[in-house]
Image (cartoon, rainbow, N blue to C red; front, side, top):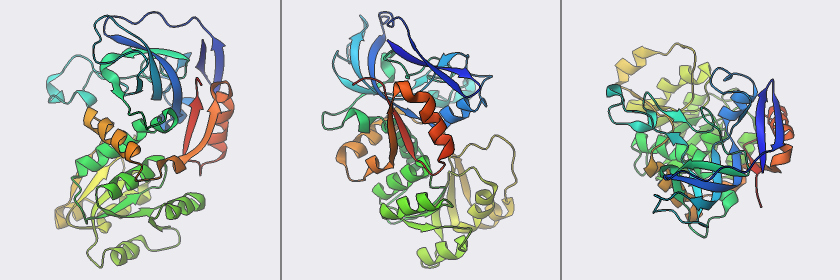
Length: 339
């Protein structure tokens, strides 16, 4: 079978390797159809996670697949069913987890901490799998994992119909957050700098503000009839967004922190005190978020497929990652693993 190995130094190598062994009693062997490229995969490609990834390693976690074989104790998944993978390997519980295993202290992320889905066949724990309906193609299903991130963010925000939302950052996750928020009944404005991403967002029906050319606070004020936003999703990872976000919110508004800020950055805490603001951290997803993402993709009420920039065969993995680096305006990139 084919497998793409990340070898460090921005290098991938596709190799022919022995077909995966039979799955264990509670495992499933998957025939991988598509594997999306995540922002985390790009960080790996740039060498920023070499302390965590065991080079050489097969990476990738945004996977759609067909079940090839099931372990002896697996009863809820059958051979031939179409599935997606929720790539979280739950570790031993820790008292500080408070029962939230999806972000537990001993959690391992499949495809980062352990081998991932950029291979023809892949063995995963059965509990990670979600079945997809027959009307959802395997290519579209490769968007379930990143959309589940967005569904988790929107759920934690507690959005209700008619609320005003600002999404800071119109990249892949930001755009998915905007679409999920719209499906929850919110009115959404996106803040984005890249002209091509702005064009895409507008084609999807969103109002967009470029804060380099417009005053974001004034635009949000006009968008909300002077009420300001109920919820701000920070998805950009930029200091300018952190500076702006408390000024975009009404009294007792909420910030959902989606972006990863690995270094400490200043935030205007006076605004949190003055307006009784809340900030909510949002990381990965839970099973219900995967189910919601599958429902949204199946219902086809949002044109999610428009977010796919390129689909390439696994053999072209090196070129695909180079393309991503050269085209920062791109959105979702998919590797086609098997026909």
